[in-house]
Image (cartoon, rainbow, N blue to C red; front, side, top):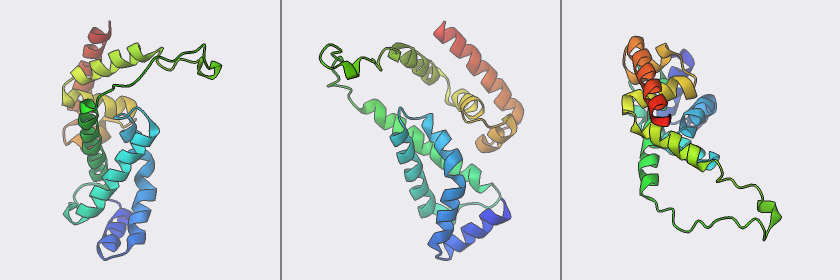
Amino acid sequence: MSIEDAQLVDQFLNGDSKAFSAIVDKHRGRLTKVARRYTRNETDAQDIVQEAFFKAARSMDTFRRDAKLSTWLHRIVMNTGYDFVQKDKKRDLVGFDAIDEERDPTFSFDPTSRIEVSLEVAEALHSLSEPQRDALLLTEVAGYSALDAASILGVAPGTIKSRRARAKEALKSAIS
């Protein structure tokens, strides 16, 4: 853990709320990128990040200093995102009507035109095992190196590489 992160954690645990604001400012950007992979829009991604920071603030005293703060926060965002997806699956998508382009020309762009492809990709991603999906999303979407992804998931870098390769093959088969 960086000295700055360690100091911020200590300051927060000693009652300095500005220290937590500094933690949020420092890590929000990368954590938002992670949250985006669980959502359909920016608002939901921000909600996931906010909820994850609430969880982190409430449990900062359980943070083990043998890991990076960014890794710990990343895992909280991943778990919060997973919870969001599970809750979202239970929601009903009733009430969406087709867009009537003839009534209002401002709706001439149909945002649902590519929904079939998006749904196919999302379904293929969800068909992967969680370890494969995590390895693929961390390296290909969030931009982490295999070494950093391995640290986040607590596995060897070679494991990340093989999981990512198997995930890519499974996606090719599912989408083709």
